[in-house]
Image (cartoon, rainbow, N blue to C red; front, top):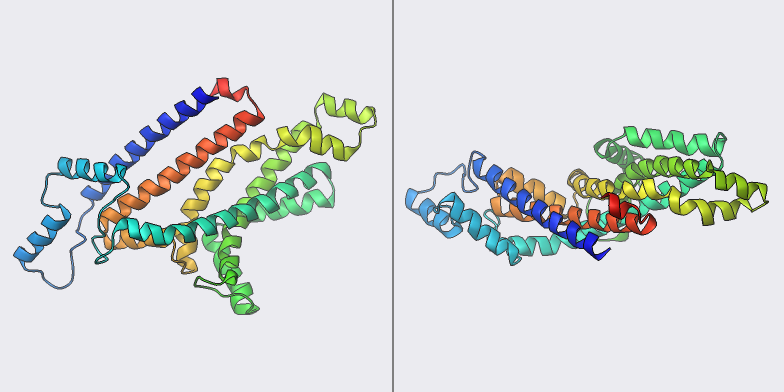
Length: 306
């Protein structure tokens, strides 16, 4: 297991380096400048600003300097927001996105996995048809459609929940539901498929013939193997929740990392884009590593296949 984890960590570091280099190149090739404004700037002042932020240096030197600083956890000052560093912005926004993502994942797992288990155990009944129909609807509704629908119903129609902002607990209900319900639909269908495969195994029929209670068969013998497809999807789901926060945070005006990324892209804030891209990539790599470890713990044979 130790060798497996070390191999995965090395692969993750290589992926992060490649993402950082690619992002730097794409940002450098993007037309425009973070210092472009409607008002004309005197050439000597513009030269001083570019020298301060390092834009007067060769691209290779800029890349090496920024990479060295990034390895030390420092991404430089924001090129748009005066007297604010990228690290300060991340430090303020990260707890917000972490809370939103964590609660959304809890909603997805708390609804999707129980629904999938019940649908598999009660297959071909209304307890199977109802959650699977709802999950199909959830899969077909992306977050940028589901979010406004929830706003119209609970925010504008019933007027029981706020539609934007952050602070009190009620502000997180709609955005967390928007992200969580979308991925709960996937978890429900994957859990149902995995549980059905386990329930159709020969050892289950043998246990049933011996009179073993259904609850014991489900929870003791089938659950561990039945959850493997859902756990496999946990990595992509976490990546999707992180990426989905761009849309959701913009819709609900949440001051998290996603909204700052959108602002950085619109304002051509190169340092902010680099810092947030590396952070998002690092989160996805770490979550995928965690999912791989859980998968190997449930099925040790995967250690030799991966």
